[in-house]
Length: 454
Ligand code: ATP
Ligand code: MG
Image (cartoon, rainbow, N blue to C red; front, side):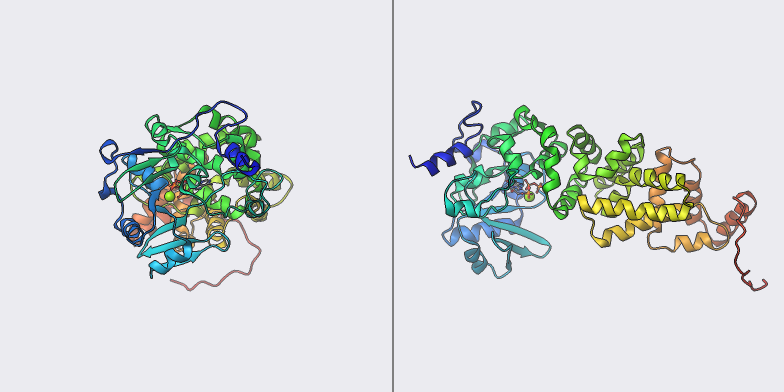
């Protein structure tokens, strides 16, 4: 057998060379033995599958779309794998666009729904072939730098991450095609990486986060061999581009199981590469009650079909780090306000090295934090000015979470709740009551402003 093929088989086969693992075999599950019903597949996905099939190509639904339908859930999106090249797919669909430079995929666009079509990709391991090696480079850490070789359907299956993500559904004869015992793992609610776990995590450390995400979202166990290397390999995530990790953080916390996911991330040492400053602060004794309460809130919102704003999530995840830095600066003699601004700058500056935070989110996040200082100061016109701030609602929600977490005395949140509901007269009354009970105004060394006599 040529050396290249031997290497390839060795790298594809799970645990080959090291431990004894099952050898994968293609299995077809006929329509009467599985519960995929076509009604659960979006019309758009079906259209793409049919058109590709009619044009003489192989095309299958794959990944989360098949997995979630088999589990009786509603897939987030539908991915299709085909033997048509991206250009051929693009030619077939006017409503499509080619994405990516080296490995091109096709997005077929139906209004707000996007069907992602990828050509079968091959080569689930490293080879010593010069041409392939160039297209499938790995770094010194085993990180897969490029992944752009077309392959057979079987190769396409074995380069996927988990066995339950490597199931294909054929719309022609309604069979499910399983190359890696994914159906068995699905029935046993197990997440199992295809191939040797350590190699697969080294190729792409994001797979560790995906393991946690699917475990949290699907309530699956992570199979022991798949689980074993995570704690040790977790620091490899620091080699992943910050922008990709930002996307992964959003996915981790917007699947509706944020608190469980947070616990799993902590348990597997995966929180540190994502939120290094937060983990440092927590280790130094800062409480994480606010993070937990915020994630619980987020989960409840998602359960009600509401959306979650990334800036609220990041404001909460970084709050312990901000608190620690803010206090440190005040202990060093900085006044409250400059200490806060300095702390905000530093915490964000450090965080963007880990996950990046697009400006459209870091701005509002800062405002939520800054408004926490303004919310207690309500005298005069201040309450009205604060309430008209575009980020007031988010800052008020954040205040409620802080109270709920026992970080501040209860009362202020209730005051704001009442103030927002009240009519003008009620609001004036609330403010005048504050005048006598509220904290004394500090004298300012500023010219007195002349106010019109009423
Ligand atoms: P969901 O869409 O619900 O988050 P998914 O399994 O569909 O879950 P996607 O990120 O949409 O996840 O990816 C689609 C498919 O692509 C996966 O099911 C898997 O087969 C493959 N895949 C995605 N990311 C990786 C990866 N890092 N390594 C290997 N295969 C991957
Ligand atoms: Mg998907």
